[in-house]
Image 1 (cartoon, helix red, strand yellow):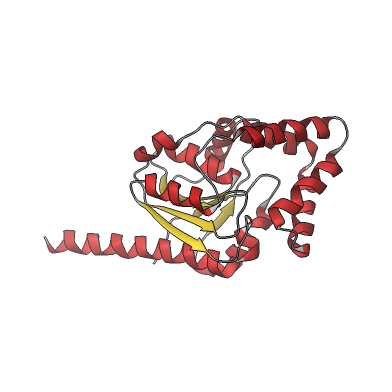
Image 2 (cartoon, rainbow, N blue to C red):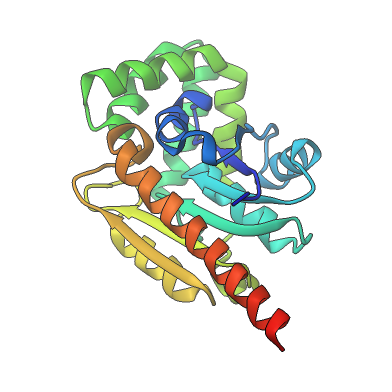
Length: 242
């Protein structure tokens, strides 16, 4: 059975390596492309992703990539056939997070990019050495301009909670029990507000679930997509019978 291609959006400070362990687990059954949105706003990033995405696709986003995925889905272009949101939420940045982004932008613009990396990567990695090293490498290779652009985008994002009921495509929400950046309550709230939301909580993982628990993350995604394909096949069969 052929599935629509997956367009996978990474988190702030991350590139395709964040999704690679999940892509490896999914195997040849799924066609995966990672696109990193470019711009200083979520809206500009969405424009960029849509310019590079195929005509129809399953959209998968994590953290900042989830904010971006919501923006794309809410545009109702007809291109997004299903949505998967990992470790993300629909709320605007809380005041303390906004101030943190402002402080990080100021730090980087005053020449403290490495200090900013040293501050942010222990949080997203939970201090797990190999994940922290990869997080630091990804952020450093993207460079200071991308880092500050992304910080501006996340601090300026809007609260989309009241709009979620307009997203009619099937949506998988994946949260993690040890995620302190996007706690499980936000995952519950997001799934509850979506008309066709389905929640999976992964035990023992922090914010970067694709790196901490790639087997479980891939299984949640594969099960979701296969179930959609089975539902579509059954509907086609019913139509043929009638």
